[in-house]
Length: 203
Image 1 (cartoon, one colour):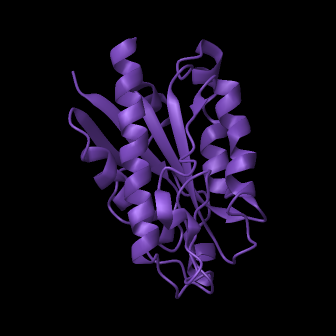
Image 2: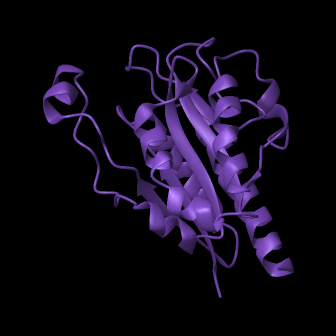
Image 3: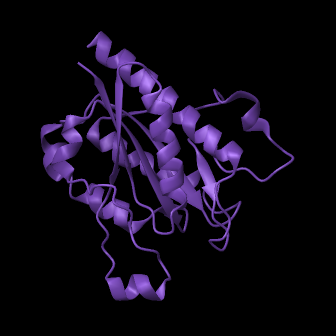
C-alpha cells in the first residue's frame, strides 16, 4: 500500500502554493509515495480579498479536518502574519478537535514551510510557533536541518528557508520563489516523504 503524504497549505498571493507544488514533486519522487496537494478553506470575504488584491484561488481541492486522518505524513505551509501562521491555517487547525480527542494524528510526521514579507519577518518564528499545534496532536516534527547541504549556506543571493523548513520571501508581492528556494522545497518534500515511508514500514 502506498505511503500517503499530504501537502496542506494556505496561500493568499501564490508564493506558498509555488513552494507546495515543488514539495509535492519532491515527495512524489520517492518510490511508493503518493503526494497530494490540499488547500485549507478561506475565511475572508471576497470583498476583503478584493481590497487586498488577492488573486482567485487555484483549483487545488479544499481539505476538511477529517481527511487529515487518511494521510501517513504531512507538510504544512502558510504565509506569516506577525511572525506566526496566517489566521486561515490556524482556523483550520482549530477545527481539528475531533482528531485531537481521538489522537488520530499521533505519531505521524509533519514538516512546515512558509513565506514571509521580509528577511526578518519570521523564517524561523513562523515554524517555531506552529510546532505547538503538532505537539498537542502528538505528531512528530520533521525539520530539514542542514540536509539541503551547500544551499543552506548561500550568502551571495537572498534565500528564504531555514533548518525548520523551506521558505521564500514575498517582499511587496512581486518577488517570486527563486530557483534555489524551489530546489530546497523539492528537497523538503523528498526528505519528509522518505522519513514517512520509513516510519510506516516500521509500524
